[in-house]
Image 1 (cartoon, one colour):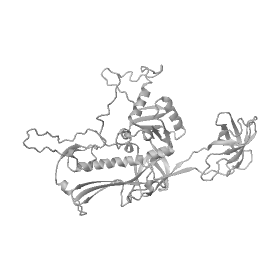
Image 2: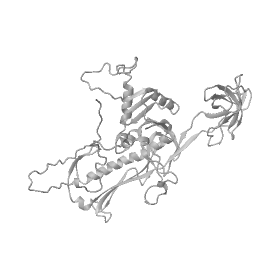
Image 3: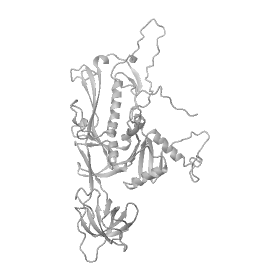
Length: 476
């Protein structure tokens, strides 16, 4: 009989980030005549394991200094030209036709990138027919061109049928002039601006005089006895996480938005930045309605990647459900699994052992491209994206591996960069990658009259998502 996890006791979403003393922080039984005093553990028990969720950008990105308030780069456009929203003004059977291009015109010239003498293929989008012809006249500004078909039967599709056009070459007679006009390289310019991220931990001088040691093991591997520095250490870990999640979740403040126009808190930022999710959702590939669970689903992803950069190796960062779905999909290829095909594989055929633990997971697979699979803690953590459902839920992200060459507008030259990398502000006199400093009059600090020690954290950074057309975001 199948069951389910009960809703209680559940999990605590705020295990330690408390700003005020609570009654549960102190022993309240001070009856010294009571012989049954409680035994206390001086070592802190790690009931939530490693609570940090930062790891994603460390695995797939680099950190590169920048000395500007604005980061700009150029990405290559397509090498070949194709228009997919065209119509013919002439009827089926016509030897010539005037084709109107309704696609977005070239932003540089305001016209179409088709010239006289070029040979084109014109095909109806509904599959009713196609022709090949030579361009005999072009009205660049109007977005139209005249084509003479090579086929004696003339145009194979009806007038006004929506069709696609691509250029496959050119043809000229002997002793003629050269091609009229030329084409400029098409680049797309992208930009992002860094945001300033801050945090602070404060402890009063009086509290620093009340020593109480706690033995701990931190998420960064350190262990030992800490006093008030335990809270400072957790503030630092939380700030480290925010450095990553800010780069993942940041969005630009739209004109007229509340963030851009608010006056309640003058110190609050008002511009935002373009995080990874925002960029991929805006100009990348998005899988909606859950996640792919069958090879045919991945075939559609491979087909889309074929039309993009065709990056050979890709990493899938997934939540637990998506990861299990891929494991189940690959497991069904085993002929001994119910529903497996007759020609399916039997994994572990020669290495199985009666005392060997059965591994039900896969680390990757190849289907057209190499796909490596990794669990992403951020998507599982209930205090972060793991607690989101519905339209805001993200099941995974496909990230191309390796690097790409782009033209850096600030450096003024081509530069090789990881597809995903972080730029932080830095100059000869100021490094804002990860700043920390102490203020106050306690704990060794003597730079103000504040009877406390304040540990300040600051970073100014932005994430650059290059070639977003090669990323895939898996939304719910």
